[in-house]
Length: 423
Image (tube, rainbow, N blue to C red; front, side, top):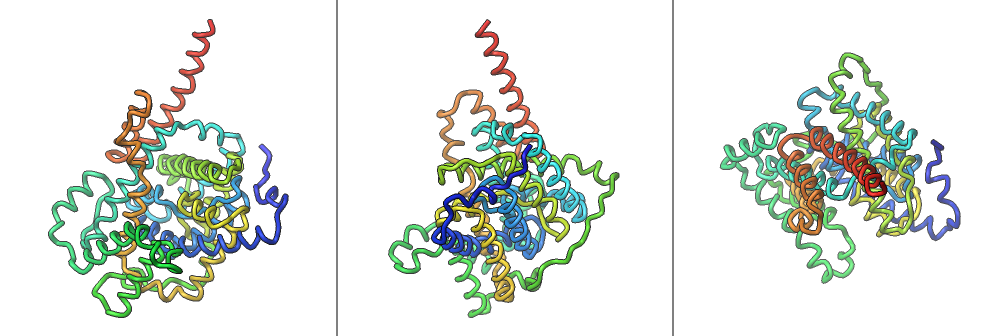
């Protein structure tokens, strides 16, 4: 397989005007990425700084070595459940090992041309994955949304039971802030057209600013990033090599494979969405190699798994991006914000980030297709609901195994059916 990153082939017809658009798009998406990166890291059981520096490093690597011109990499909602599960069961060193080795596998999936195979996964299976993950993200944020002080388990029934048993222990100020933030996010699109200059500001950034200002001005009794995690460091994390123990790796095979497959699906799905908006075409194998390089390097800086992110990539495209330059500018924008304004992050209320994640989860699930499933064939309906239920009730490893099994069966069944029809 030829290693040819898209950044090498993006300069045909490139101009100063396109460069300016890329810079402005990178700055815009960098501002949007800040709260999302922190929220995804916190929901995964890590510190907000991990999310920010993961976004910086992964975005540079994916932009420089990937196969999609406008892909924006970083922490993703799809990884929350699996990362939290690995931390809960195996600990942080094992997460770093799993991330690095998933990057290694992703790279060689691209080398051996498996990107085209991942693209064969039917839309019904992807809908089941994303909707199931959305439900789990929503459930995982109920603790922070309600202001509970309990420790949530990682399984569906355990979360539901714990929240039900301790629901009456909710914290009133936290719940009020959470509800305000969530309602604001949903109604912003309806009211912003009347706000003139302010109508161009993304809802996530506005609600983050308002909630942080409220905490700072009125000294609200809410748990903030500063209370829970301290200040955001204004320097790059130190280079630390994870310890690769073969005995430990043996027990991490399932998490490693799960991160690999999930990362491949998410990145190529995101690239496919980008193609539809830009009328371009990405190189799936090169994209996997870029994702692999990013995920292999991230653990050496204490980072979490990363992939292509649909919301930030779409925002990048709509802001005028046309080349990987926007992704690199996005990374530098994040670093500049952290370096000069990182001290303000400690005043961000955790409840606001929980509301943002619930908002992301509700927009992430393809509920219309899940409910109005008559548009799919019977086999696709069974696949979609099976993957959805397996994702929610069991775990991603089980649902991904089932989904890949369906793809393989469907692929060879169609070949067999074609031979039967011909003969």
